[in-house]
Image (cartoon, rainbow, N blue to C red):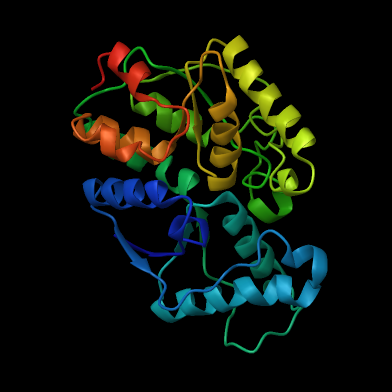
Length: 278
C-alpha cells in the first residue's frame, strides 16, 4: 500500500519530532509514503483571511502534485488537512480557477482517520511490542481537524473518536472528556498571549480533572500550544504526545525515548519510567 504524503511546513520545522515518528510508524505498518515533490505551503493559517483566491490556489498546487502520482493523499497536520479539503471542495464545485490541471477527485485523508480504520487497527494491534497499559490519556483533536463537517467529512465532530480508537489499540486507558474539539487558541498567542494562556491553561486543567496523565494530539500547533505553556509551570506537568510518538513507543519499546522526546517542554520521561514503559 502506498499513499502520497503532504508533510506541511510544521513537520519541516517545529514538528520534526512528529515527522520522525510518522516515518517510523509507517515503516512498521508497511505502508509507503511518497512525499510530494516540491510541495509548497498550504496557506494556513493566514491566507484565507487575506485572499480567497490564494486560499484555494495554494492547496490546489499540492493536490495537483498528488494527482500526478495517482495516489490518495494523507496529511498529518489538522490545519493542512482542512485547507486541502477546502480547496478540493471549491474545485469540485468549480468555484475557483487555478493554473494547474487538477480535478479535485483525489481522496484526501486525515492521518488519524486513515489509521483508525478497522483493518489498520488490527494491524497496529498485531505489531505491539510494549503495550501502553496503565497510561491514562485524553485525546485532543482541536477545531481544525473536525470542523466544519461539510469540509472535513467528520460526522462525529462533537465527539470524534479516531484518536481514541488508536490510543485504545495501543493499550492506553482513554479517558472521556468534553474538550476534545475546543480551540487551543491556534496562533492568537502572537498578538494576545493572555488569551492563549487562558485557553491552553483551561485545557490542561480539564485534562487533569478527567484523570489524564497525558494528552494525545495530531496537530503540531495544538501540541506546541499545550506543551510550551508548561515550561513556565512550577507544578506537575502533563506531557503532550503526538499520537505517532505513542505508536512508535508501543511498536519499538522505549530504549531511544530520550532522543525521541528531546523537543518536548513537558518532559514525558518521568511519567513513562513510572509506568514501566521505558
